[in-house]
Length: 226
Image 1 (cartoon, rainbow, N blue to C red):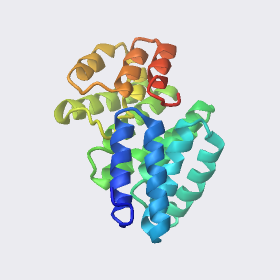
Image 2 (image 1 turned 90 degrees about the horizontal axis):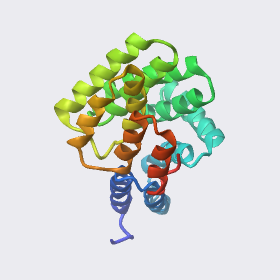
Image 3 (image 1 turned 120 degrees about the horizontal axis):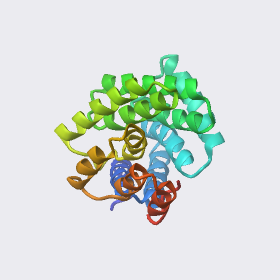
């Protein structure tokens, strides 16, 4: 790769997305760091801004939740004030996941609802599955079972029609948790059988059967933080 060209940023970024989609977050984050270095070298303001949004996901998956929350709060406040960015959806979802884990169920539900609306606004079909999956999980956690079931059904129909996206794979774990609670795990099993196998789907498969620890081990074998 010719590292002295501005296009290097895009190449590293695209490669990082592919590697992360395949389940190797450590290598993917290394490639994102190379993209950041190139963006800094060429003074590419737009790419530098994107790297800040990407850092939220990195910190979430690496367990640096306080840092993830701080960055998310800053960037999402700026977005709400008019400095919008295409990665707002992911930022909302990552913050919502931390809120959910920490027991802030209303906050998680608010972020989940906003993530879905942002995904629809983007008109990016790959942004929809993770947003819907987290929305269903947040609804379930808030005791809104019927609403969670409706959102899960919407996502299953979306995935059945378009296929499971390798490039944006972080929907399977959330969906597995919801479907298991609804007694509908077999639906995800059928969907996963027709998809390209990845550690994401392997972890989701163990979650849909209630083997959360085994799911975590499947993910960690591919160097993804739980």
